[in-house]
Image 1 (cartoon, rainbow, N blue to C red):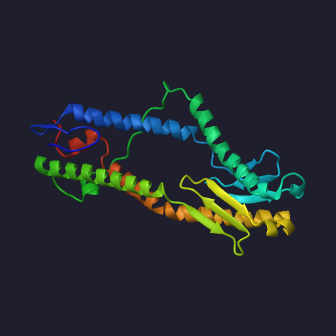
Image 2 (image 1 turned 180 degrees about the vertical axis):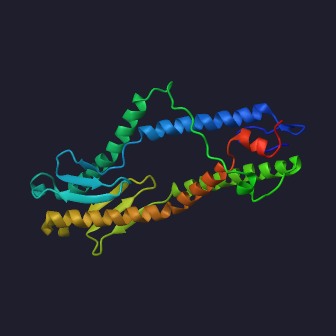
Length: 261
């Protein structure tokens, strides 16, 4: 049996899948799971974060997913920065809030011992092949070959779809303006605020609380646009996860199809 996979070549001797191929799949799954667990352990807790600019003129609070929850502008901001610099101060405060998550993650990763990864977790398996393939009764070696080829092919298609969605998302951006154009926000494909403009005429007489409120609303609208654009990526990721789960444990899978002595 010949399958085109990124893992290797699945070979059959008589009615038996070669040990090398099963070992390769098994080791790959276990190593991936150990690394995933290490990254999960290093991931910072999903809590609100807050950041301020260097002069503490602006404070931005974000949610666990990076969504802007609140923007506060100091009442005496005009005494501390020029009007045209307030937009940059808001962006700096947002960046600092977002960076706190990344900094904590990097610290946790660097502190982890690469030689002491957690043991692999057992992968849940269906009770019988019918649950996975919709089949009942015994499966001939020839039919098993066809099914396994279909599994690998489906997994590769799902991975290709995910890659395509990621490529599309990499050029996706968002732009939002407040109702009367007082605030203009642009977010690039990486999710960073690349532009934040404030109308100087409005800013000259606006109350700091209203500045923070309107900026926060406009930022949230732009972020929501970005999340909508990433919907296809999320769908593709779920499909890929479903396809890969069908591979299961190679030893159990091959025994189930009668391909292992």
